[in-house]
Amino acid sequence: PGWVEHDANEIWATQQAVAMEALLKAQLNATDIAAIGITNQRETTVVWNRRTGQPIANAIVWQDRRTAAFCEQLKAQGLEPAVQRSTGLRIDSYFSGTKLRWLLDHVNNAHVLAAQGELAFGTIDTWLMWKLTGGRVHATDVSNASRTMLFDIRHNVWDHELLKALHIPDSVLPQVHPSSFVYGETDAALFGAPIKIAGVAGDQQSALFGQACFKAGLAKNTYGTGCFMLMHTGERFESSSNGLLTTAAAQPTTKPEHALEGSVFIGGAVVQWLRDGLKVIQGSNEVQSLAESVPDAGGVIFVPAFTGLGAPYWQADARGAIVGLSRGSTVAHIARAALESIAFQSAALLQAMAKDAQPVSELRVDGGACVNNLLMQFQADLLGIPVVRPKVTETTALGAAYLAGLAVGTYKNLDELAAQWQVERRFLPTMPRERAAELMANWEQAVRQTTAS
Image (cartoon, rainbow, N blue to C red; front, side, top):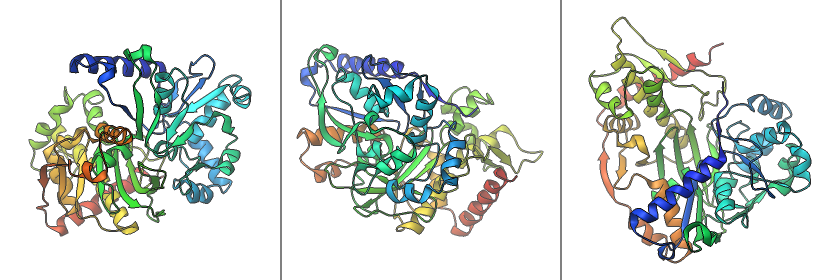
């Protein structure tokens, strides 16, 4: 329980295959491609042997909780203020630093090989760049580096005090560059000709960029497996007093830019659980019609804390709960409560952001679950502001493409990119604010029950 892993070689194989498939479908050659942009799960940790290019173990995924006890030790040592001051993060097993330390501790001879400069660490972007370039490039961008719990985001450098505290040698670390930057070229043998790799950003910062949130005060929420809300805060390092993280935004230049972030660990994954765990639906697309078969959740509240609670609660030991059940409750009420849980968690994040920085006048949305109209309307009702869905909802991929295009001159500047962003639908709030406040209070009461000892 709590362990989540990937086979890094499988990820490389699928990415290589899908790139070839894209070229074939588009009837293009490698020479037709201006640049490659990479966007990736952040925090997921890969360590490989520089000589053989083989991972020393499975990649440890961002959701993995195996280092929770080690994180508690680091907090007990009084390290959290230094971590927050430098990285903008909290000490949590979510981030790469403790995952990297776990691999060095638990894989035979890893500490010795690392000390000898034989091992390389990276998040998935770094691993893919290494493979794409035949091992010539070991690099990452500021947005991914900012999620390791080892990177000073005020100055865009690795923090040697934190590396020392976690016993991690700097010989394993990738070079860090801006998100829009020509990192290198692919091996000619891969696609038939070398292609520049010119844009890299962690998925959430890439989505913020793809949503054209280039200025302080603009915010987006991505509804994926988890939900990730980011608000651009400009050059200002904004430390949160309300359980949020400060992180590096995708940076077109060497100038530091920041964002406030809140992460919901279980967003769309709650729908997968209804499908695979409870087996009440055959496919994820059935959840809206099942939820709409009842007028409301009938008092049922579902807190999907399957892997603990993220921001703004940070309760690693919380576990999922369904409360408010009555004899009249049905799977339709549970399905509706599951959908509503995504909106409740996101509303809690935006409320925390408004306290930390400034109120947001609209929320731009993207990701797989944002196509669900019932969810988006409920989100607007809870927040009391418009929820805006763009024409292109795959903004994570779009952001990586924009960053790559900027680096090679396909796009001139940010103004040109901002002009491309277009609205598909605006969801306006219709619920009275008193009712929304009452629902949020009920939600917070349910959250408290998940952590009761």
